[in-house]
Image 1 (cartoon, helix red, strand yellow):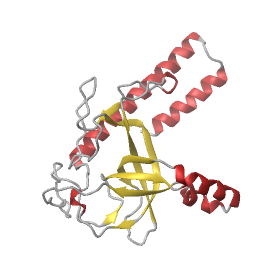
Image 2 (cartoon, rainbow, N blue to C red; image 1 turned 90 degrees about the horizontal axis):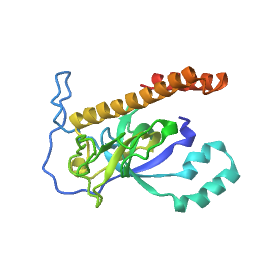
Image 3 (cartoon, rainbow, N blue to C red; image 1 turned 60 degrees about the vertical axis):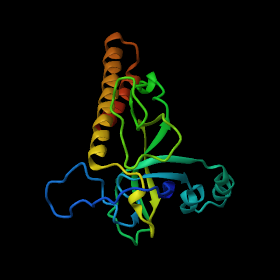
Length: 236
């Protein structure tokens, strides 16, 4: 993603009481996946951490050097909403002198996935975040400590994934009370997201084969679907 179009500010959830936790071992040895990710570092963003974030439209467009666009961004800024998500990956090497770090972020939303036949998504392609439940009995992902939120219907959606540029911050407060996924939870979530991706791939392929067999679309549409499938399979 173009860096100039993806600047975001993330803030940690408010602290809440929690017993101290151990950091992961730093040597190359088998890792106990039940352990939380390291909370000793004060450099943020952190892999596995949950955050409230907002879009900064002015910072996102400033590199374009377009006064009209910046004026529009300033007018838009007060209406920007807050979102909840977790850092699924930090794509840059973590250096405190970096102004921004590129991150993969999944946004949480309330309720099951909205079905979309044209995008090959059904309502079950989501992962509940405890204490939410899933109609097919999928286990709920559980950050530690629990999210300090009033909703019991939060889900991670397969298609609610973004690459963002996050402002680097150093915290003087204790991060041990901030909700994070353990390695075991991150791996479990990634497995379920992979299953959803495979389900979507299968639906794409079924439509492609059905369309070719019935002659329901013209050659240009078939070519476009071929390209879509190629891009989709390359992504996984």
